[in-house]
Image 1 (cartoon, rainbow, N blue to C red):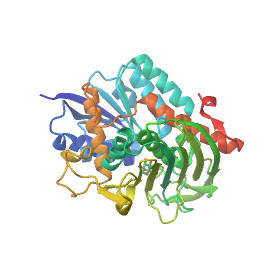
Image 2: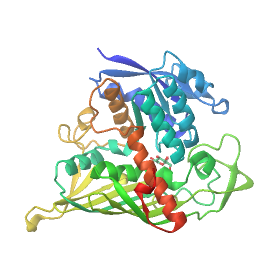
Image 3: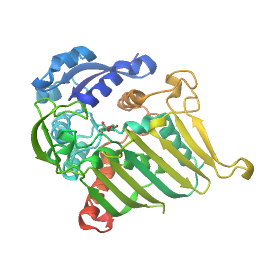
Image 4: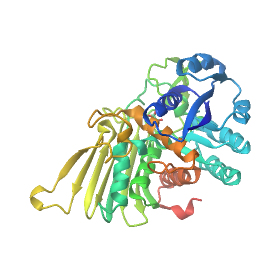
Length: 395
Ligand code: SOE
């Protein structure tokens, strides 16, 4: 008989919807979970109509007082989906109350906040999780398994992009464009994902960053009307008053991995033509991998040990139950999956981890996600100082 986990969702918006959908659906597809989430309480600010959100998604209670929710004896897991600047205050409160904490990526808006969260998690001795959802695309999880089992061999190159195009001049000065709320721009929002993906798939750590460039193409944006300061909704209508943008629209950088691979990373919100294209390519001695989120069900693979006559890119449809991670919980072969399935897969893994079981693939805890946060910081230092930064310089 599954145990129950009373979840408190702190925040609403785009990630509030993806996480609510995950808790709503997870036990309908992962039918043998040892722990089932109860959608106990959601928090939203008054202007976000928390009762409307709670009723739409099936949260039993709703609140405008996140501190009392987080401290409540009834809550077993605090899940943070607020803008980045609130990750630390909410996590600290939850950890002080001895609650396991999950938070959306990145761990925090700044390395300082992230460091405090890691220390508090260590002291609280509770489980923590960071929703790097793309790890839970079956194709990305398969890539991780192929590298781990030696199919790719010694890795020479890693090439990562996260290309979006919604950041044009008409997009208002949303929280994602404000340093005090986001910490950084496309960098912390998008490079965070592909840095985590590269670390996850290679099983290796970055030791040095160089050649970083940070650019803000759109220097000022219309200040949103009340309530439009939310996510990436392009429809957020701005007022005519403009505000200065103090974060990047794009950050590119080069990196070295501990085991010798060299890498490039590029994140931008102005890659005209790419709406949400994250991708990674890994070139090794025995094989190569290529993932593109816009074709998220496929993993492209080269078996470099194959006979020369048949050697080349093969396209694996990663939906085969029993062969591909998570696939057995879903539909028959090639009845493909979408963006929301990664979040439902992650909810299943969090329930497994809370019940002391092994997730399908590793979930980054605060300490793991801190390594990604260090790389984010190192790249910004490299861009600011126009120099190489050794990771040993960024604690
Ligand atoms: C906006 O850039 C965003 O919603 C990111 O914040 C998410 O992490 C990404 O998965 C989709 O785009």
